[in-house]
Image (cartoon, rainbow, N blue to C red; front, side, top):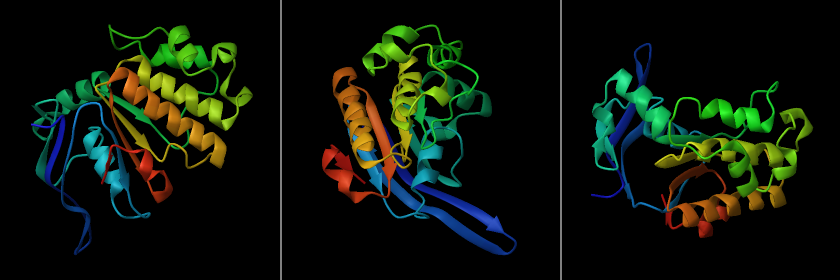
Amino acid sequence: MSFVTLSDITKQYRMGDIIINANDKVSFDIEKGEFAIIVGPSGSGKTTVLNILGGMDTATSGSFYVDGSKISGYSRKELIDYRRYDIGFIFQFYNLIPNLTAKENIELSTQTVEDYIPAVEILEKVGLTDRINNFPAQLSGGEQQRVAIARALAKKPKLLLCDEPTGALDYNTGKMILKLLQDTCRSENMTVILVTHNTAICPMADRVI
């Protein structure tokens, strides 16, 4: 079995008498250590797939497995533990806590796990040694996104999920962030799934969905 396997994942929303299919029998496999990109226009359901993979939403039908475990069969409590220990999230708008420094943002995220990379060490890995004690407002967009990446990596997730991580950045900064994610995937043998509407970045991927 592949590291990530989705089988016939369907997500439906009901609006009165109307049923809307956000996802309709989505199936794919991703191997461990792959840098996978899910590409599609806005409204195509790619973020819904990411939210289901991350345990933040549940599918109406279908099943999915991560590292041999059937996540689609998890209870609410099991999903909390899954999000806490196995998943790293990176969002388009960083979601840093404004009154905490870069170091403190990362330390907060690692309080719930026993095995983690120290904040100073992971910030050094993403090239922010000289920004450790800066607050988000004192950082550029690219620096804030690197803090967000460091925060996600610090708890050593099995699966790193990225929702349009370069959407709010200029071209050159976005390219740097994508290279950082690609390098992390290679060096840590980490599985990375990134969703985007930008087909230009697809050549970076090991797998395009």
